Amino acid sequence: MSGASEEPVIRIVLVDDHPLFRQGLRRVLDSAPDCQVIGEVADGESAVEAILELCPDVVVMDINLPGMNGLQVTREVTGKKNDIRFIILTAFHNADQVFHAIRAGASAYFPKDVDSQELLEAVRQVHQGNYVVNGEVMTEQKLAAWLLKQLEERNTYGGFEEDMFVPLSPREMEILVLITRGYSNKEIAYRLGISRQTVKNHMTSILRKLQVNDRTQAAVYALRHGWIRLQDIEE
Image (tube, rainbow, N blue to C red; front, side):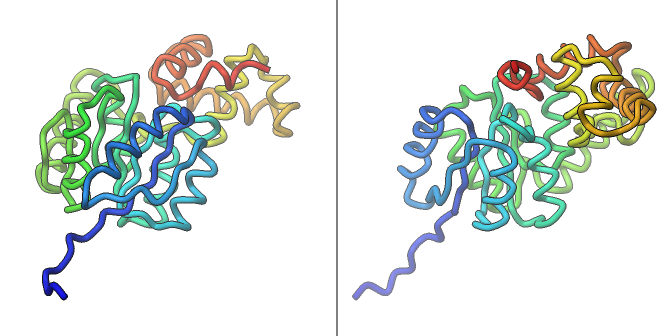
C-alpha cells in the first residue's frame, strides 16, 4: 500500500443556463486530477440554494442567468459564507464589469472564451486565496491596492459614491425587468403590490447607481451588461 498522500481535490459547482457550455466546463475541470465538479445549476435562485448546501471550494458562474444574475448570487452567498471562491465568466467583458464582479465578492473574472488551461490555473489560484484580475494573479493586499486605484479613478471622473458600482438590489432588478417590458410606474406598483412613490424611489436609486439619465438608458445598460436577458423581458 502506497504511503504517498493524494492531492487535495478542489470541489467545484458550475452555474450556467446553457447545458452544452456547462458540459464543456465539466469536461475541462474534471480532466484535472485536482478538480472535481460536484454540482451544476442553471439559474440564480437555485444557485444560491445549491452553493450553500454543497459548500464547494470554487464556483464557476456566468453573470447572465435567469432570475438573479451572477453578481447578485455572488454577493448573496459571500454575505453568508466567505470561504467560497467565485470565478465569474461572461460574454459581456469590460472594465466596469470586472470592477462590479470583484466588489460583489468574486475572486476572478474572465470572458467566456477563456483558454481552458488559464481557467484551470485560475481555479487553483483562487482556491489558494489569490485573485485573478485582467489575467494578473494578485494577493489580497495587491487586490486592495487595485480596488483603491479604481475607486480613486472613478471619483476623479465625476460623482463616485460608495454604493454606485454595487449591483442593484433584487427589488431594483425586478423593477428594471418590468421597465424593459414597457411597464409604467403605476403598472409596476400594481404588479408588485407597492406604492407608486416606492417605485419612484427605487427608480431614482437605479438611475443613480447606473449613472444614466432615464429609464430607457437604464434598461439598455442592464441588457448590454448581461444583467437582464432578452428571454426575461418576453412575456
